[in-house]
Image (cartoon, rainbow, N blue to C red; front, side, top):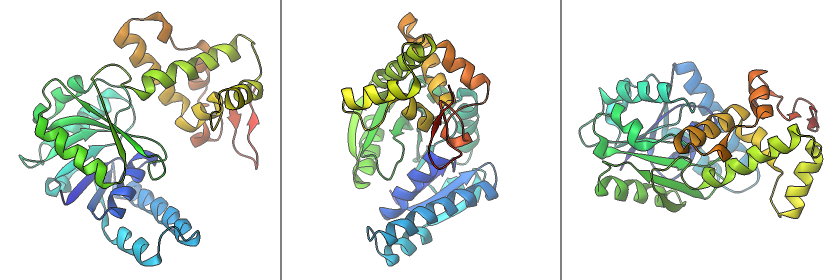
Length: 289
């Protein structure tokens, strides 16, 4: 592989584009328009500048990575890519439309992958030009820091597709795990019930936001509490994944907590909008309940 396409220049897409460019790949970063793609690249430039200041990379390495990263509007330029990774919002209808659009320009050897964190790969593959060349490649946020990629093959995914994407992931310096095409895959199948249960505990008055976070952080030796982590992930994304788990398994243990639903309905979806379980607009996060 030489050229990687990334569709979606938000936090996840920009992170995937950054690590790919730093690994030596030519990267095409796309969004709904050129301006959003350029905004994503500007964010990457800031992160790389910070890495130079901390002496984690050289200025030459930063400049080389940015030179390999090209912003495009739409998906028309993706025909030059060997691998295209979709990193749009966790909405199935949006992802399927992206696959249909990019499928019209992909070469007949290119691989199409989704960074979905929970939506079934076999079902998404129906919207791809060739399900044998389609699979899930789930990065974790923040992509430059987190060392894991989950690979998920659909029912029709070819062995050669899995091998090629695994080699790509390892070239980024990531550890690879393989998950079956089951709701939530590995990490979110385990993580989201914990975050959801923290929302239930808060809604039922078991403890305050700070005490729930402190108890889990120190009692379980986690780097941050579950409600803080939910704010970082995005409460809307957490809710989407809980719904996928609930609908995909039919198991009531995955039922979304009413308080989580209420926060999303209020538009309080976490750090990205400045307010979730914490108010993030000041110098220190402040609980919102």
